[in-house]
Length: 79
Image (cartoon, rainbow, N blue to C red; front, side):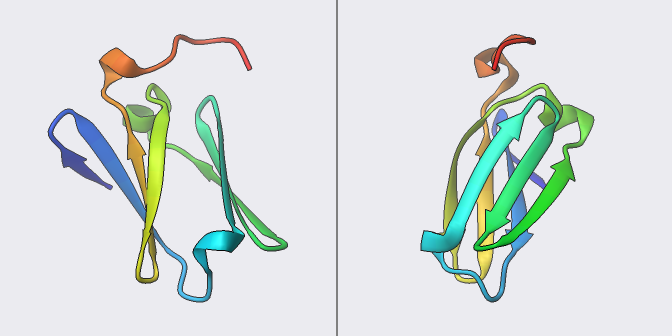
């Protein structure tokens, strides 16, 4: 995880994945990563749990997930 300005980026190495096979879902403080038939649940650190993901980019073998600044984070509850 690294900070870029007021945003954060979470990097996950996925050496045998292709962009077309990756699905991301965030629910509260958990991030669900599905690569083909495989699924991984990631408990987000507190600093990311308060933020909403705003996109992702696959670079080489690394999936980079971008989280908005707290000001852009959704309020608790909902979906």
